Image (tube, rainbow, N blue to C red; front, side):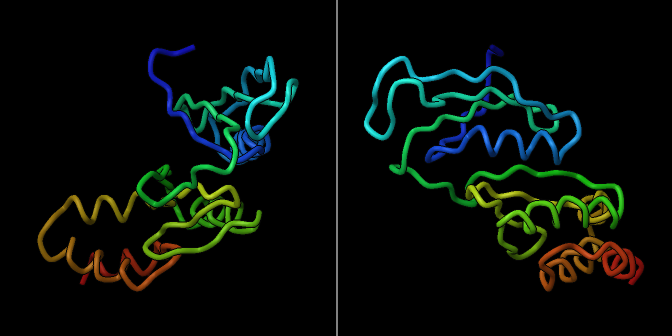
Length: 157
């Protein structure tokens, strides 16, 4: 185990989520799966309790804790993309697997985890500051999935 790990609470399907993330994002994998040594409020002995996994190089742990807690946009993974093709691939994988579109490059997977699928060109424009940042930001505010070509046009004014 790593010293610092993101722990994500799932109802009962942490292993399914971890496998989806491993299939979708590079530098991702499913690690150790630990089964419950005894019964617990929303599960029984032998059920998958904890799944260790990596998402884009970030160590995570999925805990099948039951229905007591839900995810919110207060936590999200941000995935920087290099072009529209990569943006589309991740966005479509998440939304097409029971997820939901949101605004400004955000979407939520079917387990309720929020994702920011963010083209690098958008972050470069915002980090540039001034009018370029304002134009790119204003363009982004009208989008769900980020349109790289529209951001590039906005950057140039």
